[in-house]
Length: 78
Image (cartoon, rainbow, N blue to C red):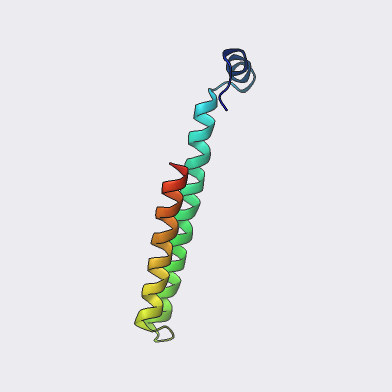
């Protein structure tokens, strides 16, 4: 559902920016948090793999799972 011109101008007058910019900021925050999570998860999995608490396949599964989540969110949100 798209905003009418009156709604868009009212939003811009009260918020100080366009509604499309708010969407861009929200998506940027979602992907930034996702990248931080991915870095943390892969680093933690690497530490486990280096100390031989995780097997090669378990480490690969963590990486593949993160890539799948990132691509899935990219497909659905972008």
